[in-house]
Image (tube, rainbow, N blue to C red; front, side, top):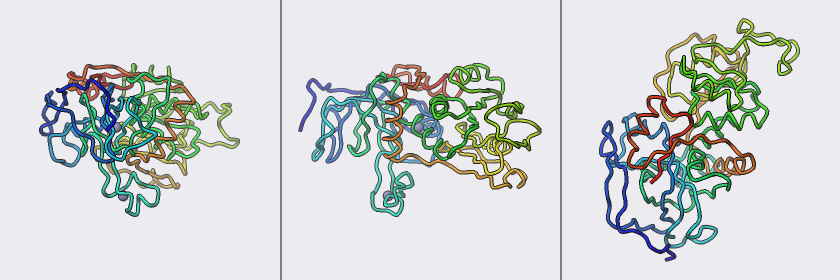
Length: 359
Ligand SMILES: [Zn+2]
Ligand SMILES: [Zn+2]
């Protein structure tokens, strides 16, 4: 088996023994052996995602514990399992995303919707993730990463960027785009949207002027609280079609809204802000209950959709885009052993952009 030289005898994994408990650093002897079709990766950086919080807090369905979270892994391949051949080689820099394995034969997989696979297994949940010095991944589910991003910068591309990309695709050709929750995913998708010539309206926690300034610095035409409507429209604005009439009392109507905050009450709030025929895209894996609302807010062929996971195609497409268009990545580094602090900061909204663990 091809192997990198000088591998250590001991390594750490930040481990969740049971939901609701802090992660604990567990030292392990001997590196994991990549099985057939797998690769062993030395972790160089791993993003901290809100989904990790849902796992740590027990909001996602119970899985056998202990769990090693982390599904935005950037690392170097140090060992190839049996049957793994080019293009992967020892020494390559690769990225490991949330989708870690699919069956390949179910109805969804065969239809190109492997993100919906009934048997899918996910990195940092059913598969030990990247809050560790080393991780094993299925060679078919690792990505080559674009040059021009440091390891810490590349990590948030692998979920925040990728899920944002898939959510944005679900918004179709929406020109006026609302983004609710301006964290790791939003700060990347806002830049993609700007590159595509869209107008970004950023909705943050009410009063979070830091996040609002951050959104404007990344090209949002407007930023405000999620308890606000979009701003009053300028009737002379070039982006408004002839004959445009706002049903929002003169306020800009959004063509689509992306929800990254896990707050169900934002669904009706966003629905009120989108025009007839517009779409509200719920991009999180978990959300608090959605309160009831008048049918009139949905009426007019508005739709509410969710985004589940990613496909490898999404990954290839997004990482190619990120290679062609340099995105500014706001990555706040934390040493691996301070994973609990990073999670607490994410929970409290103290991170601008993305937190990234560095072993
Ligand atoms: Zn399947
Ligand atoms: Zn994620």
